[in-house]
Amino acid sequence: MQILVTGGAGYIGSHTLVALAEAGHETVVVDNLSNSNPASLTRVEELAGKKIPFYQVDLRNREGLCRVLEQHHFDACIHFAGLKAVGESTEKPWEYYENNINGTLTLLDVMRQHGCKNILFSSSATVYGEPNVIPITEACPKGRCTSPYGQTKNMLEEIMMDMQRADKDWNVVILRYFNPIGAHPSGRIGENPNGIPNNLMPFITQVAVGRRPELGIFGNDYDTPDGTCVRDFIHVMDLAQGHVAALKAIENHCGCAIYNLGTGQGYSVLQLVKTFEKVNGIHIPYCIKPRRAGDIAICYSNPSKAEKELGWIAQFGLEDMCRDAWNWQRNNPNGY
Ligand code: NAD
Ligand code: UFG
Image 1 (cartoon, helix red, strand yellow):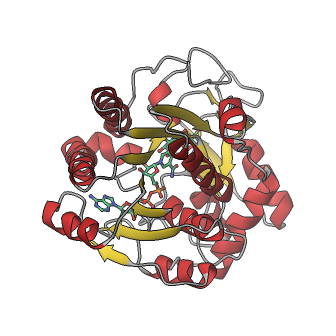
Image 2 (cartoon, rainbow, N blue to C red; image 1 turned 60 degrees about the vertical axis):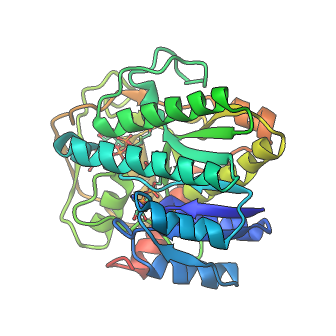
């Protein structure tokens, strides 16, 4: 397939480009580089062994986007582009709604004008809020999202499903990611956050490489086996393969389909830290800090729908995730 990849210079997008190339798909990237570095795309091209056309265009720039869709015929779009920092979204809600909602509305309109009505959308487990069943299935009702970021994901899911209900030519695949970590095993591409990392794994690797003195663990008094929060960490290359598999739903004219992309295994924050130490032989000093607002105690998926319908199942374990995250950071101590 010929695929438009929005946000392809970012963390998950760059890894997915490699998986798509390996599966024989052609890709074109649109990204405004607001949270990424074009060096990621150069390295993707090295790994993919081919050129990948790139347009530095903001999704809200309708004319710019139209020019891209006039120059290429796309079978589908994989839509990663968006702002994603949960904490920042509570401080800058307008910027999050404006970027994520307006960017996506413009994209959807330009796509339909150019006859492309197939989209895979990066959603998140955050739409479940405080889940009422664990492990979480796709049938679990969506909850009250605890941040404007989560609200944008929830609203965009609804917008796309409404559009699909009104126009059956659309195929909308909503992928709800759990906690992607790790990096391509080559160590050439990986997660490269700006400033102080919000997320756990990049914080751990920055402590390991000496950029930060210690990790703060947000709360050890949750109702979990060791008191720290439990998450469904998934290797970013497994997540990338999940997108390749999800293209099948488009080929099968799914209409609207929703899939959890997780491993189905929950591990605690402390288990992740201990595994990282064991696999990489590095001590990670940490201190216990107060709970972080908005965190839920336990969140992990039931990923069996994706296995049954797409034939996709995560292959990598926690040790692989820890090894590959460190391999990326130690080879690129200051990122790209
Ligand atoms: P990322 O920030 O690394 O990548 C997003 C990319 O989108 C960046 O390259 C950024 O420059 C680009 N972008 C943002 N706004 C844009 C706009 N208006 N026009 C064009 N480009 C724009 O993030 P990521 O971790 O790769 O996440 C990809 C997607 O997956 C996001 O939609 C995110 O919300 C979602 N997601 C991520 C996680 C996670 O933990 N990383 C979990 C669940 C869902
Ligand atoms: N944590 C720490 N210290 C840190 C960073 C995180 O203890 O420095 C803890 C958090 O409190 C939480 C766990 O590590 O218990 C995981 O936190 P992350 O910030 O890495 O991930 P979240 O589960 O909060 O959220 C992530 C993405 C969201 C996405 C969600 C889907 O940031 O965008 O996964 O499950 F929606």
